[in-house]
Amino acid sequence: MRAFVAVVPPPEVVEDLDAFLDVRRSAAAYRWAPAGQLHVTLAFLADVPDRKLDDLVERLGRAAARRTAFPAVIAGGGAFPNAARARVLWAGLDLAEQARVELSRMATGARAAANRAGIPVDGRRFRPHVTVARLGHPDEVTAWVRLLDSYRGPSWIVDRFTLVASYLGEGPRNRPRYEVVEEFELKG
Image (cartoon, rainbow, N blue to C red; front, top):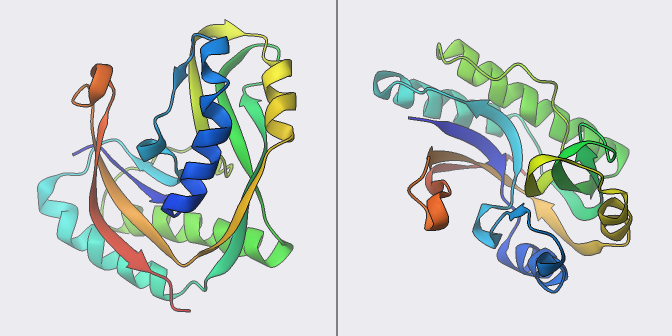
């Protein structure tokens, strides 16, 4: 199973960002992320063997129990690798310092849980963001980054993270189909 561990914003937060993007999407022929796929990836797990899933779920539950809830806001944005040659357009997170530390520890805990369960994790450094579009080829997106910088969504409390299975090509327009495997509540 291909999967990821993510913070999934509540529906009202997703709806606000989606409405902001919706009236602008036709201005660029990017692969825009549908509302149901907006999330902050904590750990990407390219291959989760069925025999290791129970161990992974147990370890993610323990990792969640060590973390506390915190407020977050989707605000601002950027591009990977940069605005001049972007392949990904993203919205950022506005977090207080303690919340930033807690989110980083949450990602570290999710990655450690997977590693201890014997599941390899994508080794890229954790950079909290919500992918809003993918580009078919590198493009200059400074205007889009400025537009995203003007966005500030509603605040919400991050009180859980989610293990999500990703089935490539099974969603609308050959996109991935996501399925929640398990949600893990933080301790408080």
